[in-house]
Image (cartoon, rainbow, N blue to C red):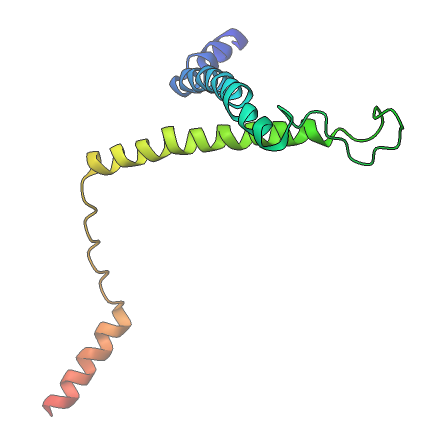
Length: 132
């Protein structure tokens, strides 16, 4: 009984799609991380003089520069996250929406909803009064 339920759970079609999506997301994350580390951060290095923000410290209390909060690592991770988000949006979401719009065709206008019964009844009363 328990094995059958487990088999039914594993064999759901949506679960396979989710698994494929996770594998693709991990691969895309590696590609974007390589892009950030090898393309974007060297440009940052040309602008700011250092190839990454990893050495930036906040509230540095030690004289030798080892103390403090490593805010630079967070900034680098944030840039990577934003680049992954932009890549997903511009290379997956936007093309998907464009393809779906072409497949579905132009949106048809919805038929107007019929008037409620009370409005119809009031119109009939008005029309009857106008006739008399």
